[in-house]
Image 1 (tube, rainbow, N blue to C red):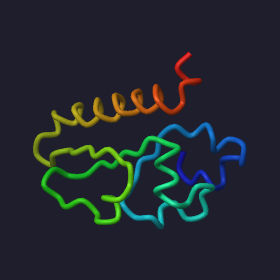
Image 2: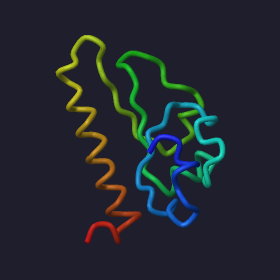
Image 3: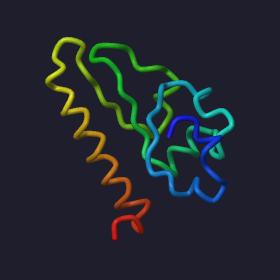
Length: 101
């Protein structure tokens, strides 16, 4: 959901299972869980960066899985995609087991 602050009711925030991080905490301004450390203890965090590019410093302190895509080898994007889905499945199995039924 783009801009969840306008689309989610307070009781719906507990159902969020994943967040794609851009690498800056301002992304979460106005969110119910606006502190990234708190947010990524409640939802699976994933960051997609370019292979060889530096990782934002702020991101290093968050519980976020890193995915890399190559500018030149786009056929390898499926590795990043699989990393996201495998990570999400593991997160749900541990933290949100009620969704595995």
